[in-house]
Image 1 (cartoon, rainbow, N blue to C red):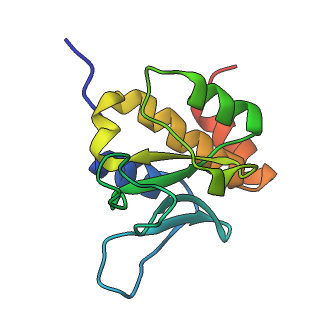
Image 2 (cartoon, rainbow, N blue to C red; image 1 turned 180 degrees about the vertical axis):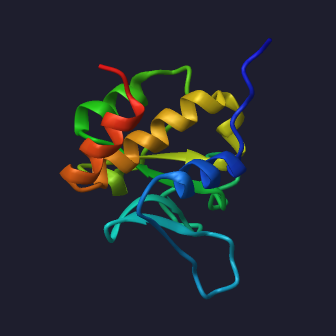
Length: 140
């Protein structure tokens, strides 16, 4: 049986399913929430911005999701793997995050997406919360 492809609904489900998460909704009528743990964002549905545009049309991408990563090394690992849809822009140089278009989430399996979102949460959660979650969910 083939692995199920990731969807936007999976981003919401996994992010909101992590402990101590607050979902911050914009008041502009768009469905572009920010997921936070302890007041720190770990998944952020971006508004269209001039740093992420279609190279042919020049249109701003309207489906970019920013996902935090643990370190620059993790970011580089995700960006250097041509088999996944993650990207960055010069605006995010030095920022511990990667970008992905919602329209390309299907290039990931649900399990791959889950791991990236869980790792994002772990990178932003307090040491106590991260340690407790790891103890409950990951085997040594």
